[in-house]
Image (tube, rainbow, N blue to C red):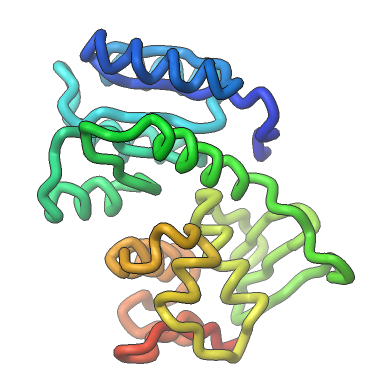
Length: 234
């Protein structure tokens, strides 16, 4: 079940007391309820107990590496994960995204940008229906996208997609058969501030293929248009 955006609870997993205080003050000032965890173990426990709408995760935790923590969170939580870390190497960002993170904010960061990114990810949990667009199902292969329930099944079994993965798939479904450029997909799934982050798109398309294609290495439906973008072939 997707969590309503209004009064959304955000879990901050961060061992630095000063950063934690800044995050709490900023988010509560923006109208969010905030829970805190100072270690990976307590973060996992609180994520299971609270089912937060979104999580902010530091990579440099004292007990569990942040990348491993994100992978473990993804075992049970579909909530968006934004990494807030001093690590800035591209390889570290890619590792976090591969583990299941949705976004990466490098310290030091602007509080206005933080709030904007949080709100953008929460909006994806319940995007408004397009005017005049009837809800219905869309199928390709053994995959069925149930638009009204925001549910995806494969051969009758539920497929666990994160909100961002579902948003990306929805954009492809809405434009089935059409070639969508990297820029357009990034803009519609992530937002206008992400149009140059092609590696985000590449990683999340790989996630979708692993979950939806019979052979992710030889996809039949989620196709790459080399140098241009992607296309969903029904």
